[in-house]
Image (cartoon, rainbow, N blue to C red):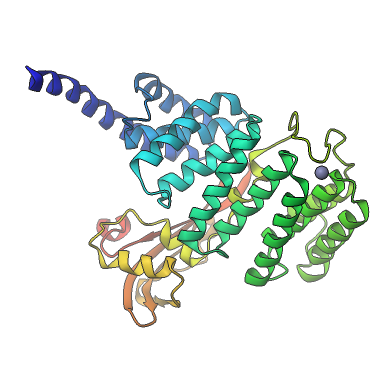
Length: 369
Ligand SMILES: [Zn+2]
């Protein structure tokens, strides 16, 4: 009798999981194409049908919820996103290690949604945890870690913890500059944000020192034209008046104009370590995995392209930037073959480059050939 009940309840769950996995793939493809509404219309029926019970989570439903939350957030529907980001966040905690890509992505989306829906204390706490887990995975000066740390500082400022916020962003900016150079665009955005925070706190002189430094980096070091989006962002921030609603030490009551594109972590420029980590869904027994672990641990790594596996990298018109094959050489460990596919596309009017790394034998192009 008991086994009949078990079978009866298990079977529909399995069918649902199959449907959800297909929907997740289709929704992700829509997100990659920049069609967020299409992604949501694919996900809505499966998320309505699935029980959003995070005590017995389904990995595909968790992914569906995270993608829906991200799409709704990007469309400004943060309050609608909250139920999904909350489920994705709690489900990932049951399903995976906090340093897994599923948990990191779900938690980053949820932290932003919490901030946007004025759950500022929870947002600050979650950012604090995510930064710690990103540091475990990418190192304390990894790009994703420092980007999330900058968002943590912004959340602290919204929560009214002004001196902690400016102190953290100041330290983050200098760590970033040390690691990636003064003319790195992400660092210039951090410098600009430091200016805005100081402006809101009434530190006008200091604010303009930051703005002037950011402007100088744009014009003198990067020689950006005034029409460049980064240069425009710096100039706009420097000309803006301070946020009249900000009272130091008091949590914000609203966050007018908050936009997902202003996040630091959403515009992380991936470097080799991060790129390789994003390809982690290879078989755990694959030698590639040990290479990935070494890379994420910060071992010295070099990439050597194999000309026999590389294609013309100038085919921008066909949206293919390059197809590179070669070996990852890891000091003291060995050499692992890989292929990288880089394509350029556009999403929400912004150009982006998508880079995919494949373990040996996993590249669909190689398999099709
Ligand atoms: Zn303040």
